Each structure stands twice: as structure tokens, then as C-alpha cells.
Length: 369
Ligand SMILES: Cc1ncc(COP(=O)(O)O)c(C=O)c1O
Image 1 (tube, helix red, strand yellow):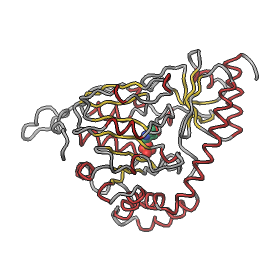
Image 2 (cartoon, protein in one colour):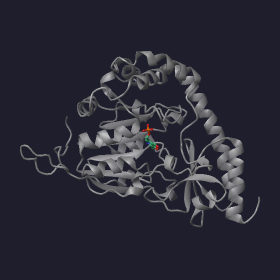
Image 3 (spheres, helix red, strand yellow):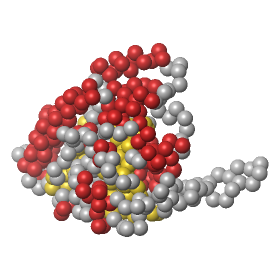
Image 4 (cartoon, protein in one colour):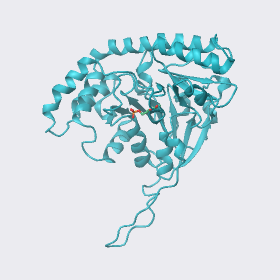
């Protein structure tokens, strides 16, 4: 592989002597970075924290049920891999199926072990956790709210041999132009683009479809738009040498048969109309939600391109203030660069949005609109 990776073993310490086992520990990682929305909904509260759509579609549930009798067989990923790759105009060697996008970040960190990784924030924190765990030095590159969170690629240190950014980014909702990703590429560097929420874009091809971008690895998730977080379904696209190295660095049969059934079905051209329909329905509700949030008057509300919206109050404790109304938004202070004036709100149905807006008028302005 023509890339500049540190040799594996950076956290392993010295080799164990014969007949003994040496337990080694990874560098301590801030536990707040390991918090995600799924643990932030107290019993009885309305879930505005988890950014997964209801689902899956009935036809897919039926197909999964029909695959259950075949579970005696080991998984064969060839058809699903070919389908996912073809979706982005790539050969199968440029695609690796994963157990949800989260697995991809851990696999990338463990296999590539970059010396200096740049994580663009605020963003999903699991890539940084994985990189710190394997002993990489991590530098945080901040997006600027005054630029509507768009990344300035010149802010990324030239020495970084791995860069991670979200597109659309979670929690800001921003989508950087493909030119920004292109500006980050250079010999010896891998650029990891977290496209977990790209399914919500009108054109879901993403940078996964840009074979011309050198060293760019796209991480895709099918759990969000299709309501399959419990099944763990995703894939990675990138240069064949990187994909091969990732594949060699993991156990066999990593993605189970039911997940393969779902990946093959959801990346087939036949699923595209339904994907677009789901994305369009979310976009319509998101536009209404943003208008309602802006009408509260005291909030900063950024445009967004997935199934969530980032909101910032002028006062602290916004999540707690909403919880007092039975509404559980995603806390934002666990994202580097944000604090407890902000929350991330999942796009839901109109009635839930109305309830939220009414609560915001009270907690922000002291009374009903
Ligand atoms: C930006 C982002 N990327 C990736 C993931 C992980 O997705 P998956 O469920 O496919 O592991 C999440 C989950 O919340 C996320 O928010």
C-alpha cells in the first residue's frame, strides 16, 4: 500500500515472554466521547435524541424473516458486496461490508494506525475514540459556526496522515462541497468521510461515487434512513489496496447473513425510489421544523441536510430545560466545540414538533407564542 502507516503494535507494549500473557491497556479516553443519543432518553420522555428513522420497510422485514431458515450456513458476502459497490460505480474490490458504520471507524483505526489523525469537529466522536484507543495522536480541527460550520481545509495540519470528517456532518448538519474533500487529499494520507447520513441527501451517491479522489475512504450506513440500527448494516468504499488491507485485518464472517440480505436489497437500484421518498419526507418535515424553531426568536438554528437539526440557545442547560417538559433532545456538550446551550433535535412528526416548539417558547421566552 503506497501509504505511510506507522507499524502496527503502537499500544501493545513489549512482547510477552514465553508462557505468559501480558494485559495491556489503551490510553484513557474521555467517557463523554463515548456517549451517544441512545442512552439519553429517560423512560417516559419523548425521544428527540436518536437519529434513526422508524423502520424497516415491511417488504424488507419479510425478506429477513424468509432468510432465517438459511442461518445454518456461513455468510457469503459476494452478492451484497457487489451490489453495494455497483451502487457507486465501483468494482467489488473497492468495497468492504461492515457491521454498521461504527465498526468501520474501529477497523480503520486498528488496521491503519495513523501517527497523526485530524478529527474535524463538532462531529460523531467514535472515530476519535477509536484512534485514541490505538495510540494515534489526535488533533481536533474545529468547524466555525460563523461559516455555517463549513470546513476550511487549510485548517487541517499538513502532517496529518489521516483526516476524518462527516458529510453530512453530525450534529451540525452541514454538507461540505466535494471540492473541500478533494482539497484534503495528498500522497500518504487517507481521508475518511463519514457518509452515514448521505442517504438523506437528494443524491445519495456521495464521495463514495468519486473514484477519482485519491486516498478517500467513504463510510456508509444503512441503519439511519432504513431504521436498522439493531441489525448493523454498512459498508466502506475506497481504493482497492486500502479495502484489501482492512479486510485482512478482521475476523472472517464479520457481517451476518441477515445483514447481507438487507445490504444487498437496500443498495440495489430497485430500492432507490423508496430511499428518495423517505429522504424527501424527512426533508419536508425538517424544513417545517427549522421554520418553527426560528420563529421562537431567541435560538440559533442552522440549516441541515439529514434527519436532525442543531439548535443553540443564548442560555445554558437547554437539554435539561426541555427534559422538564418531557422532551429528550440529544445533548450537544459531548461534541467537542459545543456546550450545553446547544442540543441536537431529531426530525419527527408534526405533532411532536408542535409540542417541542411550544415548550421552547415557554423555556426561552417565558410563555406561549
Ligand atoms: C455520524 C455518524 N456516523 C456513524 C454512525 C454509526 O452508524 P451505524 O449505526 O451504521 O454504526 C453514527 C451513529 O450515530 C453517526 O451519528
